[in-house]
Structure formats: C-alpha cells, structure tokens
Length: 81
Length: 203
Ligand SMILES: [Zn+2]
Image (cartoon, rainbow over all chains, first blue to last red; front, side, top):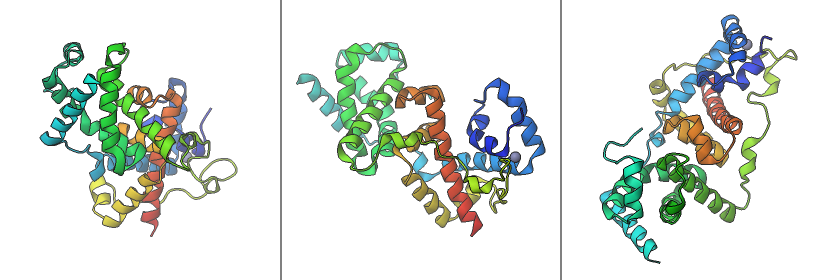
C-alpha cells in the first residue's frame, strides 16, 4: 500500500539511512516520485542532518597532554585502592 | 573510525589489564574527547568532563570482566552513557529519560488534511547547503537552542550518529535501547532541528 504524506514524514530518517524494511521501499519511492511536497520534506531533512554534522559543537573536544596525564594518574590511583 | 596510533583491542586489553601506563595514555588520548562529547549530550557541559573521568575509573574496574561482545570503544562509550544517566537521575529534579520515547507525531497533525496528505506543505528554504545555513549567526543560535532543549537521549543519539558518525547498531548498544527506540530517538532529534530551521526560514 502507498504511504501517506504523514507516513513519509514519520519514516524519513529510516529512508535516508537506508533502514527502511525492504517491503516498505517501493511504496516510499513511488510516493516520493509523485509528491513534490514530500520530496522537499525529505531533502530538507537531509540538509538538516548535513548541517548538524557541520555545527561547531559537532567536533568532539580536544584533549591536552596535561589532561591526559591527570586522568592517567587518576586511573593508576584507582587500581591501588 | 579506527585510531591509527591505538593498537587493536587484542593487544590493548591485556596491556591495560597489566596496568601499562603508556597504554592508559594512548587510550585516554584516543577516546576521552569522544567520551566528553557524549557525556555533554546527556548531562550538559558543566559536569561532562567529570563524568568522563568517573567513567575511566569504572572502565578499569570492569575491564577484567569485559566479555568482548562488542568493541572496546563501544563498551567504554556504554559505560560513559550509564555513568551520565545515573548522574542525571540523581541530580535532576524534572528530567525523565523516558520522555525520549514519547509517541507524539513528528509533524504537527494540523499540517495534514484528514487523508494524511499535506495541507500546509514545507516551503522552500533560502539556503540549500549546510554552509549557507550556518552562515547566519541567528540560525546557528536557533539550532543550538533546539539541541539544548532536546531530551537527553535524543541529543545523545544525534551526537553519536550525525556528529560522531557511529552506526545505529553501535548506538543502540551504547545507549542500551532497542533498535526501534534508537531510530525513534534519532528521528525525533533530527526533526526538531529541522523544525527550528523551518521556523527561522519562515521569518
Ligand atoms: Zn507526500
């Protein structure tokens, strides 16, 4: 059965991540082929995901040699307890 | 994802068990940043580093019993996630971890006709690349605000998937959620950010 526009919005991450179950894929493709609104919705989700990955906070914080040393000391200490 | 300076788990685990200091330093250099990043998503900036440090001690304590059913990295991140979650349970007054799985619809139902097709479809955005979107300070702030108010596990899911690039399978192990709940967390988080961009683009 062909999904509704609402169904498309509920599963658009699964679609983008190629996690849709195989039996849902043809209906999903068919809907997107016919519905300009849902194509735009899915494109905008894709753009959102790519934007999230480029946020300044998307990069894990760096660790200095001093911090590493401090944590290693703590680890050594903990094995002595 | 493999870290070039870090030996494989087979070499590394015995050395860590033997309390080899160089290996301690190697693994901290490789993973501490990722751990703080994840802890920040769950408990916030202020105590993220403290939680990650607490997790290192827990890692060493649990390592002799590590059964190798996942990679060392996945297992360490799971310890971070659990340490962060228990801090959250102890310290926060209002936040419930369960709210992450709420069943509310992704898009406001008022935007659909009774037959579930669009009544008020998405409008075109002015920007069509991440760089163009992020060029606006105001929009960057809108996105940061939207991320900040996400339930902790949703923020963790989007951090691990879209920022650290981990697979869904690993993420579900790290957060100790089922595959379907993991996907729900991720999709809700992304959709809220999408909505924040949409709101901004409407102005
Ligand atoms: Zn549609």
